[in-house]
View 1 (cartoon, rainbow, N blue to C red):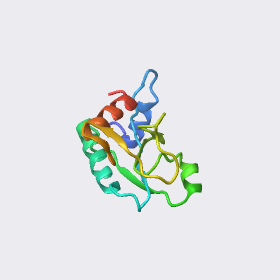
View 2 (view 1 turned 135 degrees about the vertical axis):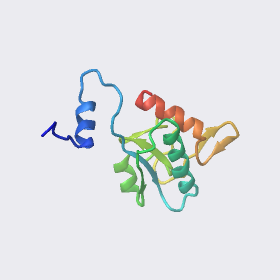
View 3 (view 1 turned 180 degrees about the vertical axis):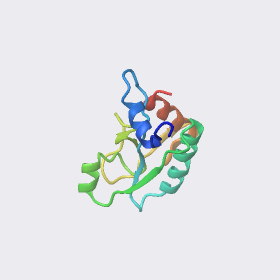
View 4 (view 1 turned 120 degrees about the vertical axis):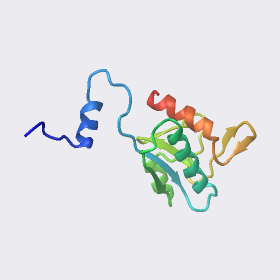
Length: 130
């Protein structure tokens, strides 16, 4: 009969649970935004490009609309166009926006509504250790 086939998802869970594994095998990547703030679609394109660049083409990007101050507080929303990996803000910390505001990112060209792809790549690498 041969060996039993193990679904790939089961292998991913098993692999992630191995001792000494410090990389994230399965990631949840989200762009949190509110519709009145521009650039959220461009944010999605850039995070997708960054994921492709680090070899994570199979990772889905989820868009999460934030419509009220209550939702913002519950989500730990750092302003429109917040990028999260497994619920952690990639650019969180001092200077992050708070609540229902448009977020700005420091880029080589000055402040912008979306970080550069290279900055997203760097933040992803730091977060997932690759």
